[in-house]
Image (cartoon, rainbow, N blue to C red; front, side):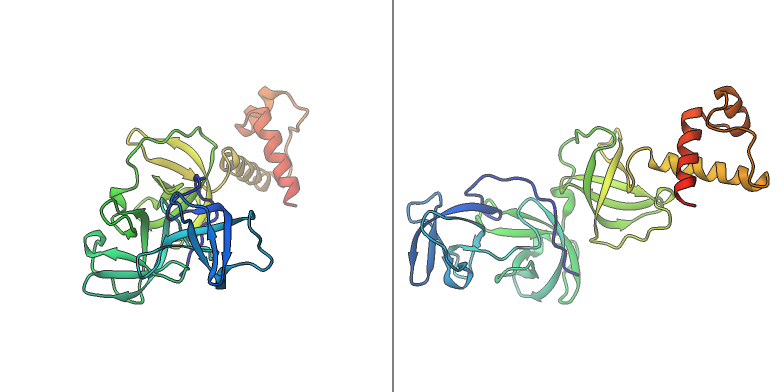
Length: 277
């Protein structure tokens, strides 16, 4: 399974392993040189050069090192960028480590020291991409605990986030939120959804726990409560021959006495049931 992530953290120009908007400095027979932090610029090979490009144009390109260790640009979109998490396929294993397909010409390297168990060709792994401070090359790590959850989240309840499913435990599906934090989607809030490992989903913050982990919902805050209220009202209707002695114009106290719902919740639940007729 190859996962292309939708939401990426915004990054400045001249960022290795990120998509950058770079100006074309000069056109040459082998492609174009784009602005970079060095004097010569970075090469965009001819096969990736869009038709009609002129000096001064800006191009969105991904920056990495080629097989010769040279800095190079490509217009290909990787499945993940530096600072992100993705489920990637292992395409080869060597004496030095494993290589994963991440959507560009050169596969990304995973040293044995960054593997939990020895990776196997043909298997898929959730990894975090980063720039190794020693080699200054882009590498991947399956040891997610080294890179995820190292700072406290600062979300308000109801905030929309991107969550990548990493597995399941006894109570729900574990997830990585916005490539940075640990979260969980509880089984009892999923309406029988089955979430596969590596799937990227839109989720909403319910709360931040004391341990810094995030409780998540697939539905906006308030939606689960509305579902519960509507189901409660539907059960009452079934028990009373599809009739209720209260309506949205009734006294709030009488509505609560008959249904156990506030007048506001009662009206919202009625509205949902009408929509689903």
